Image 1 (cartoon, rainbow, N blue to C red):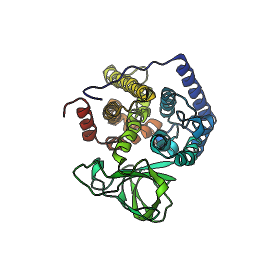
Image 2 (image 1 turned 30 degrees about the vertical axis):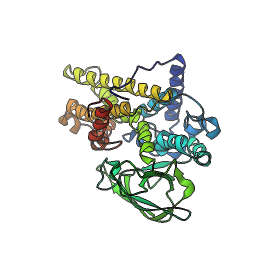
Image 3 (image 1 turned 90 degrees about the vertical axis):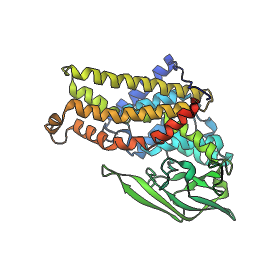
Image 4 (image 1 turned 30 degrees about the horizontal axis):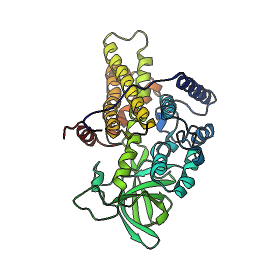
Length: 385
């Protein structure tokens, strides 16, 4: 985009509405049968069996060609399905990255052999990916990465470190972003992407325990890891273009504004019909923001459906979504009140949900790019820098 943002309101057809009802019915049945419960962890919970059930229904790899295990459905259908999964707190974490961005990256840049090898297994809910981007001392400045891939006989030898790699200890594969030529004047040149088997010799994974005491993040070390030549994604040296297109999928979806959804829904239930008048304005503002973000995100899905790469629009949604997701737990804590929270019974469901939201909210401004990086992208897209 040059000098503007293109976000039209997406049309929700009767067919999309019917599909939404189908997904809701499936999720209600799953809950009724005890296959998953709504919980404080929400959609970030790990459940490979649930992922496989989604694959069996054709709800993974939805937009991909059928010859690669996909179902050739629209980006808007996928968006509707995703909204419902997250709003219901379904445990989608196992397949999430693979379906959201790894698969589309392979589909766009991968070889025919790579597409045949990986996409059907992702679509079946049987293969999971992590993201090898962030590094120590680099922050969100991806161009400053120091993990190095050196060409050797038969492939590439990798040395370096990645950090904040979510669920690396559970994933089958990583899409690795590494430097393949020395850093020059063009900081975005000389970087490439690779498909890495997480069981490769030379890979070690160190857990990073988060503020809430959970193990999601990891540091991944590469010591003379050999990556076969046929695991290069796209073109050597073209990694920057490839990875920025990948971030469109990471930044614009419902997971960037529904992470605190359970806190908001729980707040409405907790306040009830006799909510004090002073809460109306605060809750109304949050609901209006939620609806606005939803319409913006649907607009990006429509642009993707049209074959566009809306990087600026995706960055805008991620930035606004982060502010919203971090605000929800703070507003909820203020409206409920510390005294009322302290008086809730031990193990109270809403106390758990709110506590989880408060502890995890600080991390929302890191994933997918910091506010500073996102606002730089937006400013350039608007012609302001």
